[in-house]
Each structure stands twice: as structure tokens, then as C-alpha cells.
Length: 424
Image (cartoon, rainbow, N blue to C red; front, side, top):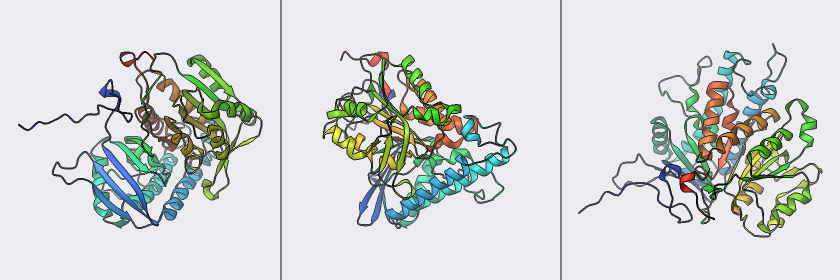
């Protein structure tokens, strides 16, 4: 007798039974990049493949990793130029510095031009990653088809790359002239507007998608530089977030100097279930690719080596959600690889959320507040929040900056709902 077992997730990464299927979902597309000498190999799996034993698709990228990284920097520069630095002459302002919703501030023609230029760069990066190389034509064809069949849950494994996946663009209409300078582009072509995305690294056997399993509210640690509010008095982004977390969290610990951060992270004894960073960050490398340092309120630089020394090789026992809200120089890409973001994931952080471009203080504050308002509803998954905000900002507010937020691991991370609570 032949059985047809149901395809559903029953165990999480730690081999514990998942209490509810709805909150821990299988991924529909898996993309894995591996380094072979100076080349990158790509493996693709999709649930839409026929059940004929065909397995996965495999190809070899033509361009070396350095070219991919250069293209990423060009994409980021385009976002800085077209979005952050956009100047609205009639109003005499930089709209993204003053508004979360720019739909009535930026003329429609300028909105379309902005989306079009971002889409062109997103398509260029897509082609480098999925079209240019040996056996890549089939992968590109299948991937574009899969993306256009409906919303996908996409997991990317790429230990050697930091790619702004949500910024990638694939045209939704193959017949349209995508490079027509007068045509508008479909916003749903941006990966982050239509699909759920996560970038993962090595498997963590102790990962658990459930936070606060005892049913209480999360414990929040805020690692902040209060001087930001002095630098940007019209868009204060530190004090309002402290007030927000003190209202919504079980406890909020505020750290504004090097020594308090060192004590909190020492030997992995961090108690935070959410560790929030609101500060200035800087990178020494060209294009934001060098080692990242940041400062809290005392002006003392914190580096990757500081963090590694504090941890002392120990895991972060609380498995915190790490949320980066670093303004003017704090790109998550530069923090993630090869700097301290990757170190935190390797030390047991649940996931990382943060921007790939230099967001403005107003956007940093408003996005964080809306993000945590949604996430603090029990059972709401982080991946869904990132996707919902990217889509709402782009379609309703004409603000593409939601696509600049990346999620590293934790697509299904959530505050445990009442029906799954455990005695811990």
C-alpha cells in the first residue's frame, strides 16, 4: 500500500515538536550560494518542481564575488541618491527626512521615476545573481516563473554575501518594455513587496521561533546614543523609543555607554529578549564594506573585537531578536558581513532586522514603532511584519524605504500565542 504523507513542518530546527503548523511554515523557494574558488555556485529548490525526482537546479555564476559586491554597492548608492537625497524643490525640503508618508508630498511623476530607477538597478543585480553564468538560463527562467505565480516564502543561504534581497526586481509583465523611460513599473516586481524573505547562515540546533513562552511580555534592552536627539531635534528617535518600550515591554533596560553594554553582553549572560540598537555607526571600508564600529552616548567606539571579547565564546542564552536602527552610516549589510551582526547570529541571536541603506532618523523611529506595535501582537511573525510594512509603505505611502529593511533568519519568529504557551 502506498501512502501519501502530508507535506508540513512538524519539527523546528531544534527537533522540538512545533505546537501549531500555522506559525512555522515551510519555505517554497530555497536558494543556496556556495564558494568554489573565486566562483559562486547556486542551488535552487522550488515546491513547484514536478514530482519526478528531478531534484534541484544547479548553476555556476560567471562573475566572481567581488563583482557581485561591487554591484551591491552600486545598488545602495542608487537608493541613497534617488531616495534619501531626493530634494523636492517646490517645498524646499528633503521629503524622506520629514515624512513617513510621502504620497502627497512627492509628485506622482517623480514617484514613478524613482521606482523605475530603483527597479533598473534591482534587475541588474538579479541578472548578475541568476542569469549570468553556466546553466543559469534555466534557473532564471524557472525562478521568474515561480515569483510570478504568487507570493513565495524564500530562504537564501549565502554565508559569503550580504545581498539586499528585498530590493531585487523581476518584471511582472514579460511583454512590456521594461526600459521605456516613460513607463511606470509594477511595484509588485520588487521582491520585498510581494514575497516573504529571510537570509540564513549555518543551522542553529537551539533555534526556537517562539519568544516569551511563559506568556509574559518581552524584556527589552536598549543600546542607544541619546545624542541623536540633540543632533536631530525635529525627528527625535531615542527618547520616544524608550517611552514606547517602557509602555509595552515587561522591563526596559537602557544602556548608553560602553561599560553598561559590556556588562550586559559579558559571557553571553544577556537577559534581553529584544536587543534594540539606536545609534550612529560607521564603516572603514569603501562602500560600507569594511569593519563597522558604533558609539553609544559616551562616544567610546565599540567594535566587533569588543563584542567577541565580551561574549568569550559563550552563547547568548536569551536568544534575542536583534533590531538595528543605526542612522547615517549604519547599514546592516556592513554590520552583518563580516562584522558583529554575523557574530551575534553565530552566538545564538534569534534573528537580525535592520536597514541596508542610511535611513533618516524620522524613518528609523516611525518604522521601529510600527514594527514593534505589530510584532507585540502574539502570534504575529517577524517575516510577516517586515513584508507588510514594505508593501504598505511602497503601495500606500509611496515610500520605498521599507524595501531597505533586511531580515536575517527568524521568518517565523513570534511571541508565543496563548494556545501554545508553556510552563518554563
